[in-house]
Structures are given as structure tokens and as C-alpha cells.
Length: 479
Image (cartoon, rainbow, N blue to C red):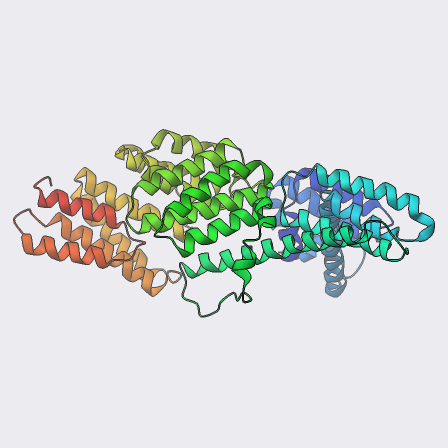
């Protein structure tokens, strides 16, 4: 394929951005290479045609299109692709600047810092103040922008003898810098706490002596982001006292309107992490708290980060919603939000997770129907689909089909070179347990006890709750 780096970058552009990028390339201020524009036109046409046309862009065909009468020069073509890649990256920076008018205005404010441009600078200062007052929530960027503005004002004031309110200007610059630093520091500290929850690490995020006491200063009570981060840290560091978490949820409702959308989304995710911690401790009611958080995000339309929903978030939300028994809502969620998943896994994710909903509803014929459409070329979905099909055949009492599937599943695990040895061992253990279930009766107390022990020791990635439920059914004579 021709220049994978360039194609991967341009494939992330929407049609709207592709159109704007072409206008960008036609500006001689940004681009004075006509061949770069011609190369973009070729790639742009392929992108709009489809994946097949993009895959057909090899070096020879690209060169022949651009230079039909010249001998192929690989070095020249690579430089041309590199120049177009750099222009695309520069375009993204320019687009980001336009989406951050405060940053752009602050840059202009600094550029106008000359005595003869005082009136120009005053006008821009008013513009910055207006933009900040219109900000949707007070993010760390908001406090840093406030610091930049007040620090520039302070610098200007320091050059004029006897400036009124100099110390007040200094105090404002200092306060906003503190808010920015403290919020960022707490954000990093929370990230470390969450990472420590599922990974072993000796690395710590150090804090200076007296840091936590200083944070109790009443000035910071009026800073919603710092307040939320303080309460989140307390919830995790003293997780047994669930009153801290309830206090966090109450404050989240109260200050939601004061938080920027990315920060509000992050605060919800922190709350969901706490719920996940409690669920892993066997506290089932937290499934319902977790689901309430998901529903609240959906109702406020803050689930999406840009135009995409990460696959891991999509899967977690479905698992939790099903655990809370919200089958209809979960099906509607899948149908609505699957389109925001990355294109290469979208259809697999939709079909697999719909099958998952039908499995919970015990609609096993629908499970089998939907799993037929899952592409097994994706190892993650292949494992998930085969595992679900094993449970489905068991639930239906289709033991001949189950035996055949277990045998083929083991062959798949043995031959696959992508799956790790540990994961292969876990899935083989799961298959052996299911096989053992089909041969166990209520009178076989010793085998039942052994099965219960083995399931309790199994990896959390295995469907332990389902296995334990099936064992209990056998023990109670319900097999």
C-alpha cells in the first residue's frame, strides 16, 4: 500500500474536513507545492470511493497518475507523501485553534503587547473576558486561561508606576494558577489510584508535605473541579466508608452545570470505577447505581467523546446494564450507539452484543441467529461468541452440539498463535468445567464440591456467576 502513515491519517477526516483541507492546500500561504495538492486529490477520490480504492493505491499507480512521462522515483514520492502528511497535521492544528477561541484570543493579546497598540489590546482583553464568561464549565483550561490573562495584565501593570489595584491583579493571577495546578495534580493522583486498582506498581505520585491540609482552604470550595477531585480521592482511599461516595454523587448533581463536558464525563467515569470496585467485591446493588450513572450520561447526551464511543466503554455499559436487568434499555442502547464505534468493529460489536442481550433474556434461538453473523477473524469476538454459544447449547440441553463445539473450540485455541498461553489455559479450563457439568448429577456431592472450588479459583474473565448458578441448579436437582 502507498504511504500507510498518510492514508491512516486522512481516513480519520470527515468529508467536511476533507473539503476544508483542500481549501487549506490551495492557500499559497500554507502550501506552495502544486504536486502536493494533486496527490491529495488522488487520495481524496480514493477515500470517497471506498476501502477497495484506498487499498489499490500502490506506489506505481500513484506515480503514473502524477507523472505519466517520468521515470519512477521512490525518494521523490516518499517526500511528497511526507509533505502532504505534514500539511494534514498542520491543518489539524489550525482547526483545533479555531475550536479554541480563548487560546487564539490570548495569543493575539500577547502579540499586541506594545505601548502604541494599547487600544487594540484593551479590545482583545474585553473579548477574552467575554469568552471566558461564556465558557461551558470551568475546566483546567479555563483556570490556565484566566492565569494567562491576569498574568499578562499584571506584567503590563508592572511597567506603569503607581498602577491602581496592582496587588489585586497579582492575587488573581496567583489564584488561577493555583487552581490550574491543583486540579491537574489531583487529576494525575486519581489516575494513579485507578491504575493501582488493577495493576501492580511501585511507582507513586508524590505530594508535598501539607498538600492535603492546604487543599481544605475554603477558597477552593468554590472551585467545582477541585471539590469533585477531593471527594473522588476520599471515596477511593476510604472505600469502605460508602458515605463518601454518596456525598460525591450528591455534589456531582449539584455542580454538573459548572463543569466542562470532558470533566463532567470524567467525573461520571470515576463514579463508575467506584461502582465496579464494589461489584467486584460482590455488592450487587452497585449494578443499579452503575446503571443509573450510565443512564444519566445518556440522558444528558455526554456519552460521546467527539463523534466516537470507545469500544471498551460500549462493552462495559452493556455488561452493567444487563447485570441490572435493563434488557430493553440495553437493546435500544446498542442500536443507537453502535454507529459511533470504530468502523472496522462496528457490525461485529452490534451483532455480538445483541446476541448477549438475547442470552440474558433466554431467547436462545435469537442468540444462535445473531452469532452466525459475527466475523470470527476478530479474535476477541471469536472467543466471546464461541463462549456464549457453549453456554447457549448447555442451556438448551443440546449436548451433542455442545460436545462438537467444545472439541472445535479446543482445536481453535490450540492452533491460534495470537491468543496468549494464559488465556488459552483459562478457556480450556472453562470448557472442561462445562463438559464436567453435563456429566454431574445431584447425588455426586464430591464432584459438585470440587466443581465449586475450581470455579471460585477461576479467572474473573470466565463466566463464574453462570457456572456457579449451573452448579447450584444441579445440586438442587434442576438439571
